[in-house]
Length: 171
Image (cartoon, rainbow, N blue to C red; front, side, top):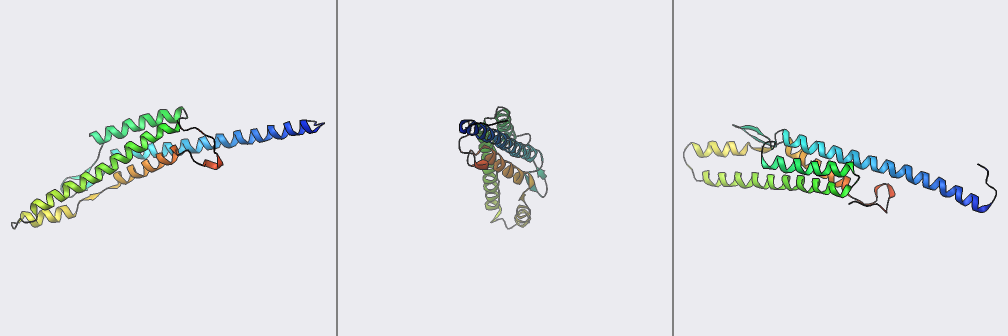
């Protein structure tokens, strides 16, 4: 390319800058899509594997209950958003998955405290046994994966300074 005047030089520089911006924008979208997909995969896997562990019952997952369906609906909306490059839709996935985690842990502790209170004054053999069993209950890896998935979806949806970009749309 031969440049014979200042206007031609300015146009050439502008073309190079636009090509670099386009390349950077494409990379940004790819990173956001990958982060969003990883978050959604973690959310779905988190509903299938045990979210709670109880000594007699074993692992309890969220797959067949309302909590699982809420997460699946959020992931469906988020996937559509990722495919359309509408990252604001991924906020729905992050919000529903995060709400499922918060409500799940709150309900878990509420039920455990209710059972502990019922057996606190029990002087028979059932009281100490129930206290021991309740002490062995724990939040399992599924709930942790749900929380990490919600965080990754939130990160993918965030329309801040991803790689220096200031002008993007999220919805």
